[in-house]
Length: 97
Length: 161
Image 1 (tube, each protein chain N blue to C red):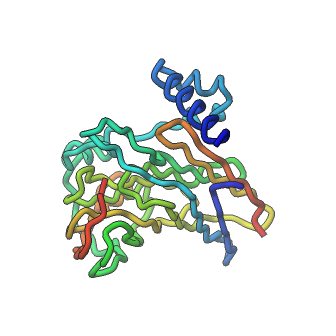
Image 2 (cartoon, rainbow over the protein chains, first blue to last red):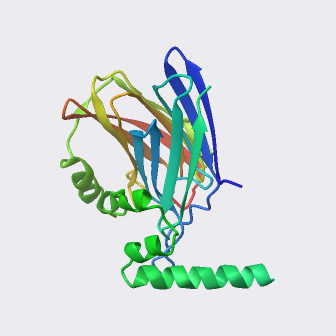
């Protein structure tokens, strides 16, 4: 199952997007040398065009939520993807309706 | 049990690959799609422990003009600093980026959002706050920096990065 859950509502030519990512967002610990495990980047695209690029650090809460609004219409493809500091990531694609 | 062992091995493999210098290696292993690896995280800003350094790295400046056209929606009192919901909204034109920082956190630059031209300058997320602090939002509009701040009192601190 994808760790990204997204919902988009189309209102007057805008998509209100709300995405939830299941992720621990563990902060690094300098004392123990633990590098932590946290998402660094979240990128959203509509039909392949980048509409949002978020740069995150470990001070974003676990299981992060991100909300934004961008121009879009029914039939457009919304893609949300993230990468974390271990180089792992996931991508979620949906058609707007 | 078996699954756990596999996971541990995979983790080791990954750590090894990255240790060898290798986002390239990670791509080879099929861990990342190439397009994902190409994105550039603003590490200097996000991991900076000094506010000045962090802001300089992302915005090229630490000064901004106070603006009442930026709104920060946040609770006045956050009982749990682990999860503080924040919304930044601005009526400024041509906003390229929104930067959120929490001066009292160990890593004060919390997030940087780069916005495409079709995206409304309004973003929401949940952040961790180590202690009572101002939350500051800076919008880059027409190449200039505008900002505003809002105090959030934290009853039980989150680790705050």
